[in-house]
Length: 145
Image (cartoon, rainbow, N blue to C red):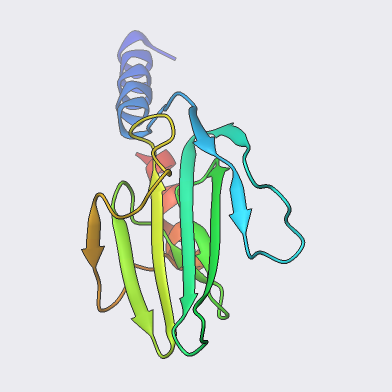
């Protein structure tokens, strides 16, 4: 391999590294309330991202709320009965579908950024969803540059 090809390869590698986020880990609340099989009340975890998930059943009286705060190494998670993918980073999104209300967040801005979801709330008529197909198409493309 000649010097110009080697230099081109290094430039490509540096460009890829600039596109990929190498985040330090964040410390997050690790808690669940109303989640079957989960008994974490006050705990912490460490990961690349903190997650916040709150579900409220609007049909139940008194209100039935499920809350889960956790860590993730990926900037998305599944929610709802259809296991929809949520991946809006550093924004609290509130969405309502039928008798269900969700407040969702994936954050990496600071330790314990998943303590509450109201501080940066955005209402959404439709939540940005990430399909497995789009992940499969986008990730390899980054490595081809």
